[in-house]
Length: 269
Image 1: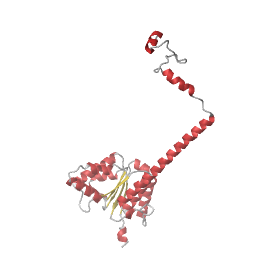
Image 2 (image 1 turned 30 degrees about the horizontal axis):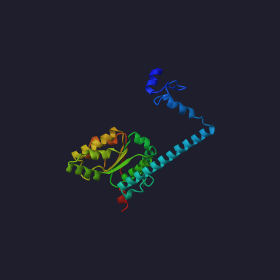
Image 3 (image 1 turned 180 degrees about the vertical axis):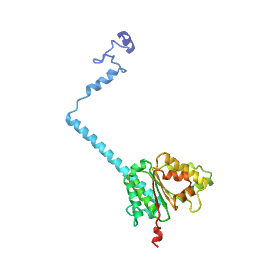
Image 4 (image 1 turned 45 degrees about the horizontal axis):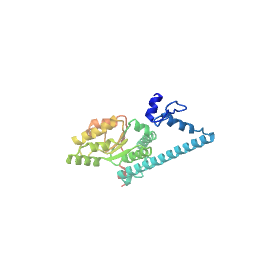
């Protein structure tokens, strides 16, 4: 822009220019905005730089401490919610309180402890747990112990009782409600613990079987482990009452064990 046009635009005399940038000294000139700020910048002394670094480190440590405290509270709340869902009787259940008095029970306990020691890796790999056998053999006790370890490591765990699941499915069918709500509850968490998803008598109905298969297949595909206790006398009975497609997915790559000993509840009588 020549001097004549600049003077006419400003309505005054000869335009001024920035001493350093050489551009016109008007409100729209970037040089007139930046240069005064640049002139005000002063070099920091080593002591000032050290103070800034120390303050920054303190801020980072405070933020990390707050995050750790918040995570500890989240895990504690998650554990409390899980135990409320399972019931007061199981509040003190751990692998350490699992009674192993026979060779078979001690073998199972060793396998469970090995799984627990590498629980994050096993969960990330989608490795499930299937404990089947007679009633009262401590299957749910063992799964609660594992669940506590998983929750303490920050994983999400959902506990679903088979009878409650069947009631929810019956209500959904009666109310003509979408079964997606039930499936979402079964697939949302990192770990799903299913306590005896087998009817007390007979086998799963076609509706129950298809809905449960959808949930188990979704978890299986996403490498989300399912831990399940089954009150059946053999793998064959599990296939007959739940369907081979469900049982096959539950057992694939999982820790499976047949709890073939007497009920602890009967032994206490």
